[in-house]
Amino acid sequence: MKYLILVGDGMGDRPIKELNDRTVLQAARTPAMDQLCARSRLLQVQTVPEGFPPGSDVANLSLLGYRPEENYTGRAPLEAAAMGIELAPDETAFRCNLVTLEHDDPGHTRLVDYSAGHITTHEARELVTALQQECSTENFRFYPGINYRHILVVKGAYPDLQPVPPHDFIGRDVSPHWQRYMDDPTWKKLVLGAEQVLSHHPVNQKRTSTGLNPGNGIWLWGEGRMPQMTGIPERYNLQGSLISAVDLLKGLGVCAGLDILNIPGATGWIDTNYEGKAEAALNCLLKQDYVFVHVEAPDEAGHQGSLSAKLQAIEDFDSRIVAPILHGLRAQGDDFRMIVTMDHFTPLELRTHTSDPVPALLYDSREQETGCGLDFNEESGRQLNQNRQAISGEEMLLTLLERNNT
Ligand SMILES: [Zn+2]
Image 1 (cartoon, rainbow, N blue to C red):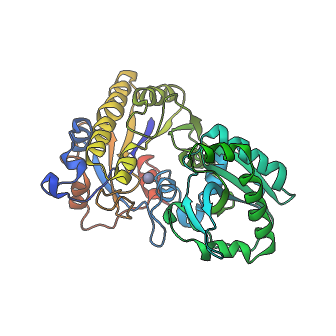
Image 2: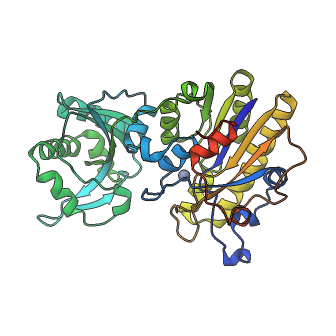
Image 3: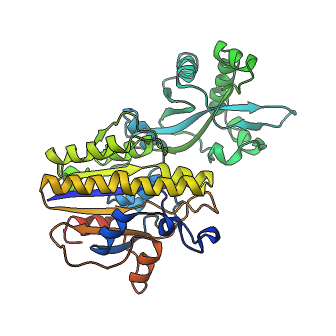
């Protein structure tokens, strides 16, 4: 038996006036998912447990079959895992953004840009390497990542920063948050030392002279220790792989004991290499029994508030991921059980995630005649499950694998 989970990130939405009060998923042309759903069971899954922020990290941890209540420690350790950084039990990873800061009025700090003008990876690597040379100590280590996204590893105990994500404060006065760094001698030394190194670095001088935002400061957030998770191979005796363009997902895959398949041309946007992803999933199942395929584009379209991009992303997910994988699986001839779902809703009107339970179709290649008879969308999920509580991600995985939920 082969097992698959196909995830359209942020596909879920609310009814939209322009679409005659239908959701994007209802309005999009998705024949593959609709035909499949009609012959599937339709589950409702609470991917974001109560009390958790509806992040992709929490929601996909659920879809991988884990309980965020037990296994979610923060975003940065997942990104560290994706970068191949190993954390000792007494070490904490922080996301370290290269940001553009302005200390204009005395005592006031403004966060001009959370991404330092989407600084290039090449430039950022020079800056973070300089930070590692000049500012690292026995207890602080810097690791360069992609664009503005880097990691700081802190060894041992540290004074709490109550960190906040910088993208929530674009262009705003962040003095109270900045002050928390200044209130502690260790953080103060690190953060001011970093500013000193960065603001004099030739990379930033060149950026400033050409009108680009410099990476003249660091912003720490998303901290956590490495989650202690039993991998899917040990837990369920299944070898499997994860396919995604997104570092956070790759980190989750590493923590879940999956192989990470890096697909050339996978971008996280509507120009991603769908065909490469579908082909890699099918090839993976020739050798292994489980694959998790993640497509980021619908979520990005939701964040941009673009109806046309979200329609396109969902239709492409249907015709270029679900359809070819289904076709390929039938040609390969093994029995399979497959879930098609989303991690969370990213409603266009809100341009951010919500914690609504998500619909998940569960198709079994051996059961051709039974199914819910409905199209795949948010409303079908609600309709079929209105008298039942949504299940957890762990229950969803156990149902997929036909394991007793004990
Ligand atoms: Zn997501």
